Amino acid sequence: MWHGAGVSNDYLDVNRASWDERAPAHARSADYGLERFVSDPTFLSDVVRFDLPRLGDLAGMRGVHLQCHIGTDTISLSRLGARMTGLDFSPAALQEARSLVARTGDDVDFVQSDVYSALDVLEREAYDLVFTGIGALCWLPDVRRWADVVSALLRPGGRLFIREGHPMLWALDEERDDDLLLVRYPYFETAEPLVFEDEGTYVDTDATFVHNVTHSWNHGLGEIVTSLLDAGLQVTALEEHDSVPWNALPGAMRLEDGGEYRLAERPDRLAASYTLQARKPDSQVIPR
Ligand SMILES: C[S@@+](CC[C@H](N)C(=O)[O-])C[C@H]1O[C@@H](n2cnc3c(N)ncnc32)[C@H](O)[C@@H]1O
Image (cartoon, rainbow, N blue to C red; front, side, top):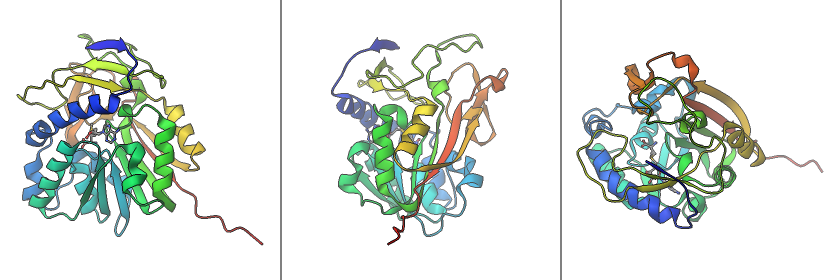
C-alpha cells in the first residue's frame, strides 16, 4: 500500500529495520535457494547467469558488490573468478551472507556500510569491478551521490556493471487485476520518498513481519546515465530487457526459464529491466 510522499530524515533506520527482518526469511526461502550454492560449488544465481554473456572474463578482478543482500550474487561473481567484497547496511543480511560462505567455502568478504559511506570502509580507486542492482538504486535518495561513490571506488580502467529494475517498471501500479499498465508513481527522482507499507516481501514465505514501512525513490534512466557521465565515467553499454528477475507485477507477469518474469500479454510493451556498463577512463598522462 502506498501512503503518498512524506518527508523523512530517518530513511536509513526505517529501511534497515525492514531489511533486517526480511533477510532471514529470504535466506530460508526456496526463491533464493541457498542450499543449491552449498551442494553445487559451481552453482550461479539466476541474476548473474542472465548476464554471463555481458560480464565477460572476471578472472583475477577485484570486485565490490554494493547492496549485496544475503550474498548470492556476490558468491556467483566470486565463482566466476573475481575477488569479491559485498557491502550492505543490514547486519542481518550480512550475517546470512557470512554464514552462507562459511558453508560453501567461497572466499568472499562482507562489510557493513551505507552505500554513501562506502569510502569509509573500502579502499578508494581500488576496484576493477563495481557490481550492483536488482532492487538496489531505489533505496537511495540521490543517484548523483551514488554515481560519485561508484566512480571513487573504481580504479582507472575499472568498470561498473549494473542490472536493475527499469524506472518505467518502478513507476507502474503493481496492484491492478487486469493486464493494463498504469503509470502511478514518479518516473523521475523526487526530493521526497515514496512511503510504502507492505506486510510481505518479494519471496514466497510464511514469515510475518512488523517493520513494514519503507522509503524509496525512483531515478529516470536519463538521470542515471547523466549521473555516471558527470561522475567521469564512460557509458559503454545499455540494454533494456522485457523481463526482470522477480515477480514485479503480480498477476500480470509469467515466470519463464532462467528465473525471469515477463508480461504474460504483449511483453513488448514494457522495458522491465536494463543492464548498463560504464568504464572509468585510464589515468590521463599529462604532457610536459
Ligand atoms: C533488494 S536487495 C538487493 C537484492 C540483491 N540484488 C539480491 O537479490 O540479493 C536490497 C539490499 O539493499 C540494502 N540496502 C538498502 N539501502 C541501503 C543503503 N543505503 N546502503 C547499503 N545497503 C542498502 C538492503 O539491506 C538489501 O540487502
